[in-house]
Length: 252
Ligand code: PEP
Image (cartoon, rainbow, N blue to C red):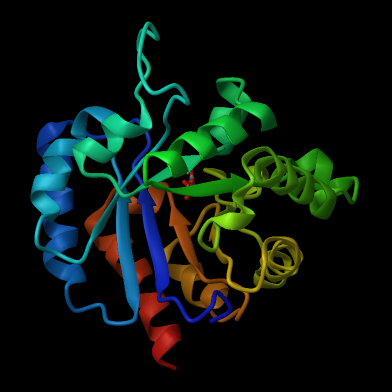
């Protein structure tokens, strides 16, 4: 485990999926099963309308709650937006920032990502800072430079050096929702590069087409401190199998 001795973290990103009933059922099943997952810290990230409901399901269990996005302003005339304070009030302890779907579909550039990180930190939330290169960038040999730029923009804009050890997720864009997972060695190379920039205590998750079949091999890399799981987190069977594979690697 490279991330300063912290437990392995497995986060389920539910994205814009699940109705109330399914969110409640999934959270309940994960909470009941995750109690005995030992070396793995489990967290789920439901859509905003389900945060309070899921927080109630998770109360008293070791499963954590993350939000998927936030606005950087504390409040005011920002129709449709949700502030960091609101997320904390709803029960979230973490928030994804800079997910590639936000960067690509909603225009979250490095400046916006930095503003969101700062707002999260100010509200007492831990940002999970997502970085990753596109297929074109990787093919051009730019993967390390791209994630370095994304990280440096986030850090320099927020003065994060004074805060607790950062939590990052390396999510190659070409691997998200595509079924094309990074090879463990590819992930490890980028994680090592990010760790050199973000500090030895940084926790760095891998995300991108993680499944029960590939989770163990990814977690076998000492550089990989945990997993950010999208599609496979929507079924309790596959998500818990990912958690179990991660736990097995940490026990080995
Ligand atoms: C994600 O969106 O964070 C993600 C990793 O998705 P998937 O696992 O579906 O590739």
